[in-house]
Length: 206
Image (cartoon, rainbow, N blue to C red; front, top):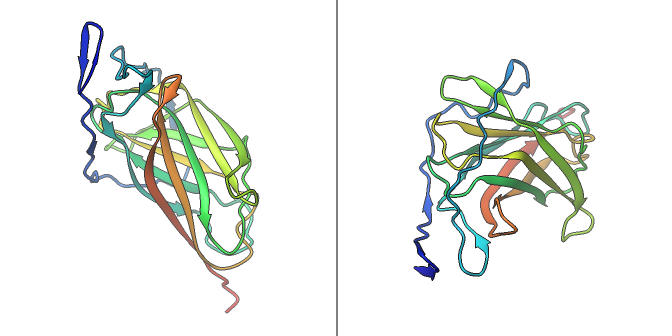
């Protein structure tokens, strides 16, 4: 427990159980625009100014629409379960390649982002994507910033789906891992690593 003037804040970090939802849809068609992504009024902020999630988003998994090596026009989808109360709005995601025999480059202007309810309805999310060098300079880090941030309250029991467009699939087959990190809203957000999205690519000539 951390004390601050006129207020007590308890930060209880809890992992969300995996939701029994269909993870992916593989398409950005039939998206519904709806403005309910209003940030919560209650801030989970400590005395040092850092903001934290109370309940963590949970990475459900990743998949690609095309798993053939060196192919064009693939989309890599990452599905994230959102808890009922994150405590802070979700401001940003970072997705960075950590494993694989080739380095995958991404477009910054073709990202897909939507919320999908348990009924399958999709609500498009406005976002901005930046592609930057990661700590491993030969690989890229993709940053997706949501505007407005995704509400801390998940009243519709939705999951977040983000689709990244690679310039092309890797040249070599094998397993490729992409680490996903979430950032709450705030000037000093405390980032949380959500896990690795695992994609497998194959040389279909053999």
